[in-house]
Image (cartoon, rainbow, N blue to C red):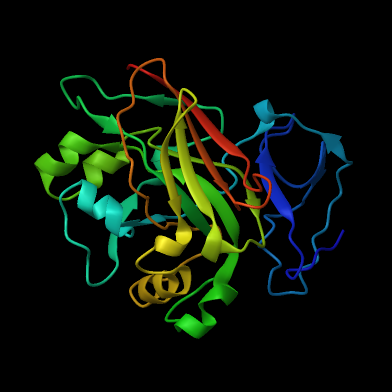
Length: 274
């Protein structure tokens, strides 16, 4: 099987009888891969498969990546910075979420104990999937490091974020980083609508064109400080409208073109108390 980086292709990671497997998705069919889809990005972009085609369902979906790190960008939408009473940063404001915070599509966000946090909020975000080892790239070179795009929810204990000053604990609880449901290799990312729905109600409804720092700027800035590895994630910031999550809620992140389908699918998570 072969694919071209010039044509959009959809990849996912699924449960199987032999364990997690990367696949190329084509409608209801999945074509298992022998390696992660970015493994041969620099070698002709030809992916081999020794497994037979299979059908798949939403219940099979896992996080589409297993990153070495999740690099996040804070206050990258001016309206979001304003709603929390913050100034717009002069440079990208970076923080990490640990890989242990990852949550598969359809999973459950587990709220901290009330003695830990009483204010947990959603943050819908476009996420970048890195496709090759990247260090010190320029803005002009940055998009060559991108494998594709997916959706993420930067779940945040807002009271701890304010209390601690630094954001590690507030952003780092287990299940606080839903990602998926799949990766699209090509998208017109400059003009996407980033939405969050809670129990069907639209709470966030922003545009990637309102980012303060665009994707090439972010990749160049981050790679000047650290090496980005294949499969790493960059969360690009959230638009205004963040709000609370409570036990029993269903939170959905939807990223789409205004004139097209939901190419990145619906990243859905339920919410429960500890």
